[in-house]
Length: 362
Picture (tube, rainbow, N blue to C red):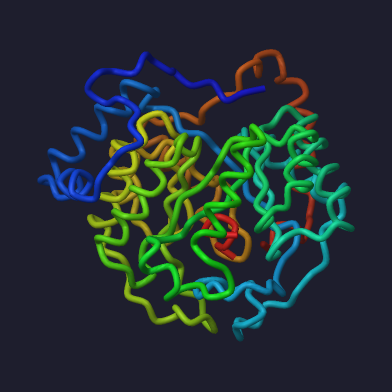
C-alpha cells in the first residue's frame, strides 16, 4: 500500500539531476527570499499536491546506550544526558503503538534503534516488526545504524519500504560532530540499502555549528547520489543537555527555510520532511517551510527522546493553512477498521518515550 501523491511528468524547468555543483546550489540558495520561495513552490506544484502533507510516526524501539558518539544525540553512551538504556521493545508493544499511530492519521511508521549496527539475535524481532506494521496497511521505515549484507537481505525479504540513514552534515564538517564512524561509512550503508531495492530516507541537521556552505554541500551530496533519496528529512537541532552541542545557537528561521527550499529544488520528486525541531518553530516558520516545499512531517508528541508538537497543534495549524493529511492509496473502505483502532488510541504505553537521533542520524 502506497501513499497517494499527485506525481506529474517531470517538467523541463526542473529535471531530476545528479550533477549539481556547489556553485549552482549556492546561487539558488542565495536568491532573494521571495524568488527562492516562488521557485521552490513552483517545483513542488509540478510534482505534488501542495496542500497535502504526509504524516509519519516515529517510535524508538531500542533507546539509549548507543556506542556511537554523535554530538547531538542524547542516546549516545559517550554523553551524560541522563538517558538510561533500554532493551529492544517487545513486538506486540510496537504493533499497539503502530495501530494508535494509524488511527491518528499516520501513513508511514518509522522505527528507530540506538545501535551502531543491529545484532544477529535481534534481527528476527526486527523483521517481525516490519511484517506486522505492513500487515496494518502502513508504509514501514527502519533506522538501525550500519547494516551488513545479511541484514539488508532480511529487511528486504520482510518487505521494508524505507531505510533511514542520515548523512547529518557535509563531509567537511562531519568529523567535528561524529568520530566513531566516517562519512564514507554512511554512504556505504545507503548504497547497500539502495542496491537491495529498499527506498532511501536520508537528510541532515541544521544548527550543528556548520556553515551555510556545509548545509549546501550536504544537499549536493544527497542530490548527486545515483538516485535521490525518496525521503529527505531536514532537522533543526534540538540542543540536548549533557551532549557536546547543548549550547549551540538557535538557527535563524529564514536560513532554515532556505535549506528546505533548496532541498525541494534540487530533489524535486522526493518527500522533504520537516522533522525534529518543530516545537521551537513558530506557526509562521512552519507555514513558510510548507510553502517552500516541505510535504512530510512526524506527527505525535515524541520523536524518540525529543518533544514534538502533537496531533492537536498540528490539526490547528493544518486548519489555518488549508492543509490535509496525505491519504494512503486503497484506504477507502477502511473506515470501520479505523474506528475500531481509534477505540484503543488512548491506551497507555511507555513505548512513546523515545533522541532526535533516528530522525537526525542513526
